[in-house]
Length: 246
Image (cartoon, rainbow, N blue to C red; front, side, top):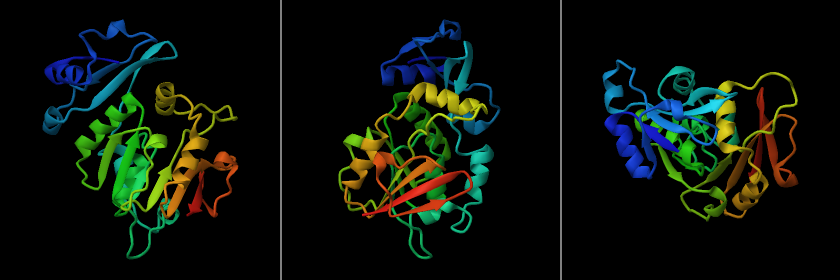
């Protein structure tokens, strides 16, 4: 990873021990470049600029960034309620109860945001270096005290925590068998993360952590992780939540 542009970017390069460059033309398949957005007229963006990661996709330069404070993601978050989010039932929300959740596969942070807007305290873990820093930037711009983030491999850090009620897992979905193109954003994401080849082990680690509930988000029709049948399943239009009561 390398960074370019602006004093803030140079500071990030020093902090993360990355090379600092001034030209995106050096981008190739062996590198990716962090860059802060400089094109916004927003006053807030001057103090909390959006972080992008430039990389090649289909031999062409592209870029990836996460935004939890604007667009469709923010719109969904603003309309969240226990009645319109299936994930609320999956994690065990009640009328006067909201669990503390460990999102062990934070990714783009969207499910974590929904759970936070439901009223949960959410601890997010992400092991991928680039994804972690993009998500960290998104959270800095969001400014929501119900969400916290740490860079950790959850398989190695799912020790029992009395303050965590639910472990939420959303491993990378298997490649689609259909011919429909996957959204470019997800293709860029998967280019960075690859396949979650250890998702079975992640479930087994979660089940040993002594929390009350483990929830796994899966595509409809897919097999259970580690061939372990859940206590029950909750289905939405596109996904299935496998709920393990411990």
